[in-house]
Image (cartoon, rainbow, N blue to C red):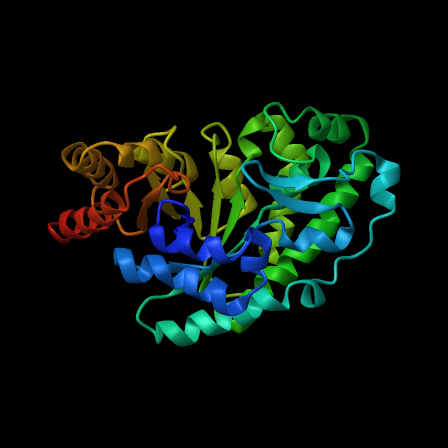
Length: 321
């Protein structure tokens, strides 16, 4: 779950040489960053280094990664009229560097561990485009959904088309599974999810290359889990706000789950981390289909040795079952 990051000294050293977008657009450097956690931590899969907003640059919305602020959209799109002026995103022309990064990483891994590609889910990417950046209440996004549903539907359609080609391009380049991050979908009521999100996410998942596993993840989604399952995915990601066994029951025993340690636990000492790891594995009860993971990405303040210890604990405690 977003393995590379500021908690790793290797990553920080790389970022001293490159800005964020500059790094993402440089296949050799992005491949190096993708491989750093595999080499340092001993994880069971590599996760591509890229960003969910790279595909929106061709829309002319003015994407920038401002220092200390994260992604900023300088020209947000908030009306049906503005959305009507948006064209189809030429993904293959916009992000060839991502596909080259996948090829480089796949070659470097040499089959030792699989490579997971990823993209933002249509709702989360749309919320950035509409809000102009992260938001607390997502009021512009909700107003657009409620007041101008045709415009919302067109925006989501543009993003479904682009995201499907983005993920299928990663698969063609060598990704063996893909993850869809719906990081902000937890701000929605279940009825809003069913009406304004589910049909589009389902269309995206159905457009992906058959036979490649799809991980469908969101945060703050305890009330949305049955509907996320209905939208699709071979694996449903669980964040830390729901007990793993309860979350698994909500999505059904016929689907795999991923999760769900609170990333903040990794700020504590190893004995407590071990206690929490054991609790999650006990809730999984040895059933097939559980991918141990954090409930979101590694926090920048996390000691890298704690992440490495986590991986070792999961391997050890899992082997005992």
